[in-house]
Length: 85
Image (cartoon, rainbow, N blue to C red; front, side):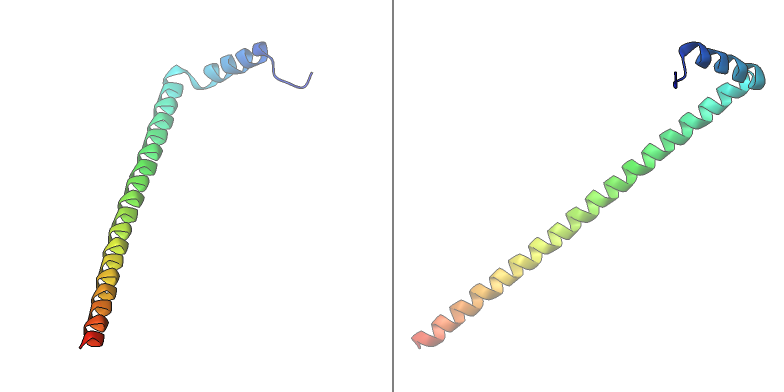
């Protein structure tokens, strides 16, 4: 009672086809497909850039952690040497 039936959809499709013609509808479909393809490509490029940025941040963080660990080890060894002397 409240929905659109298959026959109503077919009638609407025929009316649209008569109003715009097949050539114009084909062009609109092609343009819409190109827009969707471009959108997907842009989303993929952003995801790739985000992944590269995250990798770079992780590498920098690991480098800093390594430097801090070395400094801590050197400081501990220096304190031990001073205590023994």
